[in-house]
Length: 212
Image (tube, rainbow, N blue to C red; front, side, top):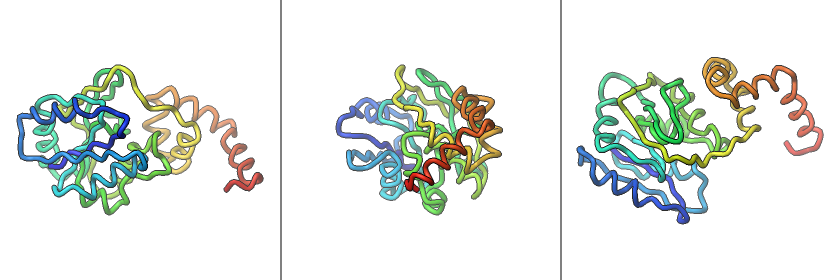
């Protein structure tokens, strides 16, 4: 098991590393990618490439893994034929397995992640984890394990990016309508704009303006 944590020099990652030192399972490595020149997708990919284990457990520098998180991650992926497991999240952000693959609590097969191209920087900062999980689904079984729990800080850092949201819907229309529209406010708003032609108009303006 390799735990990958993307971070920035401006961010404090000592607490999450301390929590990992106190895990019930001890046979794992921690790969911290601390580079301001990399976006979050590039940092995650660098950590996946540098990892030496067959299994990757992914979390963020501001999260608090319970003492049995690594053990649960190891058990979740080794139990059956799944290549990707999404866990639950409690705290400032809550998540209970809607097939959106929240990046602060993911476990996946390293070789498969590399074969699908890792995380896509076109989505860096918004829906990059969801898009990664949906690509993983095309290469094997992915599932949700409620026992794989991560605690999220009270304040979230993600900022909604409407254009990346629209791109995700455009590239994965069936999954978007099934999984995001019913569960998120931003998904419902984006779907409302889409059905009224707003994003088609935006795309035409970009093309005419020569920015494509």
